[in-house]
Length: 90
Image 1 (cartoon, rainbow, N blue to C red):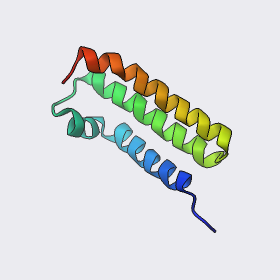
Image 2: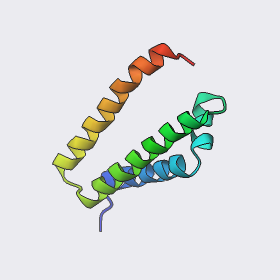
Image 3: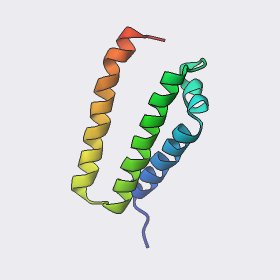
Image 4: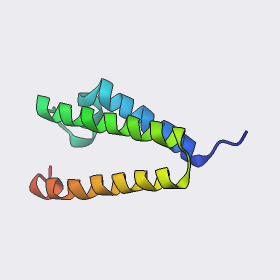
């Protein structure tokens, strides 16, 4: 049996999502450099749930259409973060 790169990446994504769900302060503080307020922790948990769901779908349906949708979701997330990055450069 050959392990596809998509499966490995989905596993990594799922692991990261589980960390975001289980320890949102720890996962985000490493990147943001400071304690998170409760609202920010909830946002991290929502993003973690998205990561786990997206990884599960990629593993369950490893075909081109689903992978393409995952790329679209990631692109929309990145675009939605641009205004936040501009408003709060920290």
